Image (cartoon, rainbow, N blue to C red; front, side, top):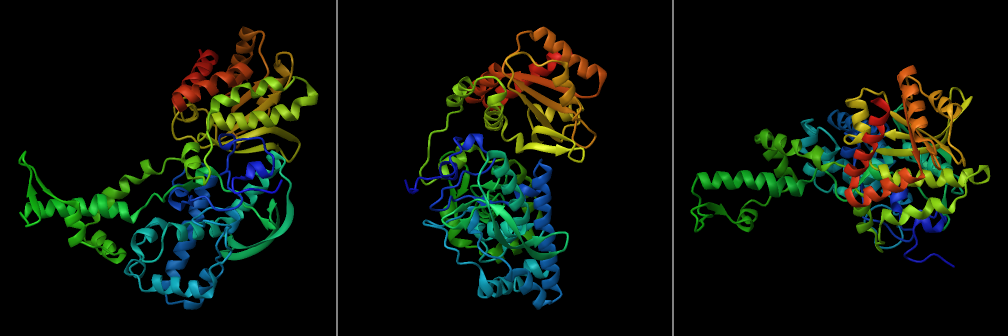
Length: 484
């Protein structure tokens, strides 16, 4: 049956997973989803990989601004002319099939002129890419998202390859086009293995990298900070726009304020220079607004939203018999369920990650992206080194024993971290298992928590009812049993 407008990436490639089980945006195949790659959110991310992507964007724009200030027009056009609209991501504002219209020389020149004539660029007071959206005319969230995507495209290509290996998605080798290489400070191109749809490549984007709207927002800065300041000034001056309410409070109608103070982007920049304390106060609010997008937020942006209920995932493990023959199936299911339970704390899952020069493999590794909750607590309170969470899956009918714990403990290192999860079907002797986990703590500086199917099901239920707090409390109790 041919794809319909409701077909998503997970449908087309028969992944059998919903958005909550995927680390990336489950894009619609026949149109775009109005989400944007946010360089500010990446730049302050707790996940090392995303933060490095954000740093690459900052580095690129510093080179661009320096070139503009030095009137190196040829270099500037070379830096801008390599951009194109990244239709491979299916993110943005297109209502139909991604158009592929690209940037081209004309748009590059227009952007060059906008930047060159901007007081914000000339004075060198742009602190991050978010300032472009706030202070430079003609650069909206879609353009900034496109710019950022082009800059981190090399990282997204690698991410897509890894996710396709993880989920068994078929790929073909294609020319990925040009993208920014931070190490060479230049645009390069290469062939890569990508999934194809309707003859065109698809590039996946992690959920942690996108937002419904960019965190730095000129409209919010104007309406919530600039106008609030101006209202206070008018009240102090007893201006004609001031109205006295019945309770004696003085107020200026927001519509009257907007009518008198119709600010352009350049005006906002001038205001921020005259009142840096207001801009500083606004920017202090941004980290709280940069929190990761939820699966429900993503679903609401879909052209055809679907119900998301993590409770529906609870029975999935019951249909997988224990034993070696179904080990891969169990492994694949666990990847999706852990993502559903622990997102956004755990991200970027990788399957059978080779370590120690390829001599060993870890079933699953997750990046520890937590800035709150259990996986933040183990680092900041318990002082357990855990940049990555190492996971081993055992589809055994019987309890895992010391060799299985030793295997996972042997994957610990000063680079990868010293925290692991051992996932198994059931534990018939829980007291003995806790003792074995205590031995790991006592004989090393690492921690292993064993989770059986019932633990996975319980955390899915807690996730549905109590969210992240319920899951974190459950994991804290698991850790307490080992440490006490």
